[in-house]
Length: 250
Ligand code: FES
Image (cartoon, rainbow, N blue to C red; front, side, top):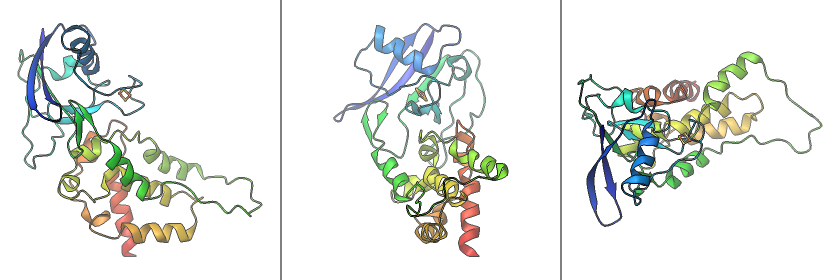
């Protein structure tokens, strides 16, 4: 048996609740939440969609580390020692294991408003991503039918297009916790992805650098690589931020 300690809230109350579940081989944290919802307390709220680490909907804080619930197995986390993060935001690695602990702490993702229980409001996060205009403007009068992209550039871009906008990076970011206007790791990684895209127009790239040249942009980052550590898709926002800083300084 495993105990889930779930931080809950309903707009009026904030409380922690303990649920004892029967662990099945290969059970994920998402499946454990279903167990609670279907057999113990139908009012427990959490978000999910694909159940396969593709949609990014199920990001939450598991033992103080931002992770995808559908990709995290109970057996991997039930004996983890929980680390109280020094900056109060999120940990990136468990400090060790305590065999037989059989307990998992589950909380909503930090740095976003909670709607209910484990569901956070993603609107602010999506607005930050939208603010960098993550699209390519094309010249409608051009006769050019297609643009071939060098495979090495394609590979470089792929490191950033793999982002599933789950906001685990945002939940781990100390700068995002201090400054709600800070664009955050996901937006800045996306900005770099569009900056290096050979289809982006020079004037758009210049405008992008101007937008990012502030304390709410690339200069707000603490360069602590927490976002890199927690990304389930191995995206490296800090690297993108450092590249953008270099472009601005040139
Ligand atoms: S449910 Fe889609 S990423 Fe977890």
